[in-house]
Image 1 (cartoon, rainbow, N blue to C red):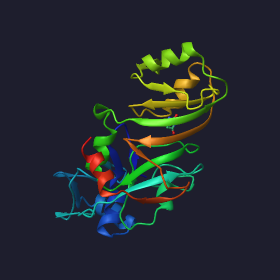
Image 2 (cartoon, rainbow, N blue to C red):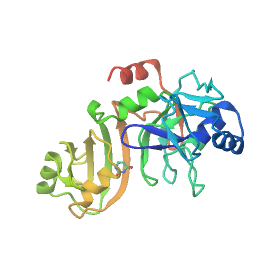
Image 3 (spheres, rainbow, N blue to C red):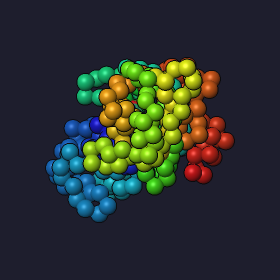
Image 4 (tube, rainbow, N blue to C red):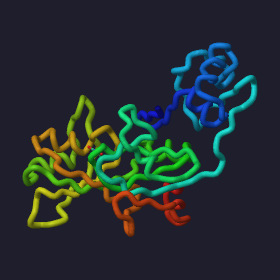
Amino acid sequence: MAEQDNNIFYERINKFIAAHGKIARRTVDEFLLQGRISVNGITITEPGTKINPFKDKVYVDGELVKTDNKKVYIILYKPEGVISSVSDEKRRKTVVDIIKTKERIFPIGRLDYDTTGILILTNDGELANKLMHPKFKIEKTYITNLSRPLEEKHKLKLIDGIVIEGKRTSPCKIAFPDRHNFSTVKITISEGRNHQVKNMFEHYGYYVRKLHRSEYAGLNLKGLKPGEWRYLTAVELNSLTKK
Ligand code: URA
């Protein structure tokens, strides 16, 4: 299964070679044991080894395993009840199952199973790694439905940054789209820690009933319904690569 930490994708070497080299995964495992596979010049024998599919150079019998060269960029309106990865051990539906392309795409970052909204998927690892790197402070805007109205004192603390799991959150923006309803909160953050928005509100005892990402890096879901997707336009792509 492919994974991503804060800013890098990793994939199991046997899966990577099976997909790109069109070799059965079991055969790949045998090749590994026979010492026929190397990564960046080092022989690898362990099938569970994880590699960065966009950076590492993988060789079978000295021949480079080539990856896709046509880059695709997709915007998806992620519906509820879909997992943001390429495969799932529990066989739940993934965002990649929704999208019919022959390229091997990955989501840039994650949305929780029950979170809806904008998700960008691509096979361009360089752009993905860049957009996920904290240094670029890519803005993500969420609309949250809280279990009770957000109090002003908590709003101010959250804007300044609070300590979650020993690490301070960066300053963020908070607004109320409906000035008569303080339980619906628009929050813009520029980091992407796991469950960050839920954890921020839960820190002060607010339960996030609904979470929807309405914007990512200046892009929005205009014209798409839940479960729909399309390729990014040249203008949209340009705006991402310029970040
Ligand atoms: N923050 C969360 O808590 N969940 C998401 O899905 C995205 C951001």
